Length: 205
Image (cartoon, rainbow, N blue to C red; front, side, top):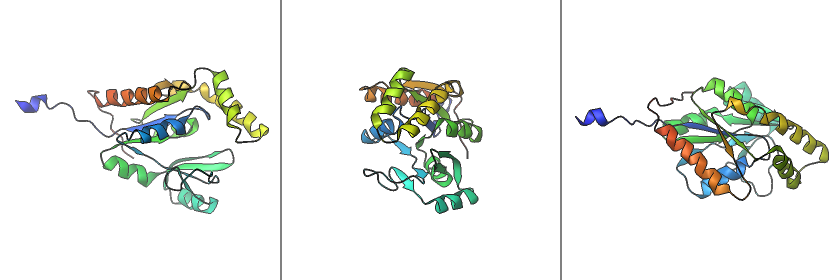
């Protein structure tokens, strides 16, 4: 009789954390790592210069434009995009190996990349991370002070457009200032609920 009650067969999930620039995607994932949550965190490849506090292979894979072009030619990227004059992309093999290990896989990509991934993996869970309102988002971008006034204007304009694409996602999570752990707990709750679906999502790449 026990077989009849063996109904829960959780499949590894592919979770995409996306949202406009400045909402805190990197900060949220960093907090998840600090809390040692049992997920595989995908490392993005990029051609942008490494910042002082960043580690190759941990924060990003920092590649030359030639190396990145080779990955595009060999179809080794799940998705890629030009983001403010630099390339960013997700190495395909890394995601396949992570899913095969049975772990839930989390990646952070921009809104455009999330739309691409939805086509490749319809059963991926797309989470839209945002601020409480557009003014808050603009304020966060302005206080980063990591770019010129011209590129800041471009980021703000892009972010305003990206906020309108929330309907393309499965869930929306507000990342409130000073409530980082609450944001992480909400994402964990979404993942936990998804594992209790009767019809499990099945991601294959």
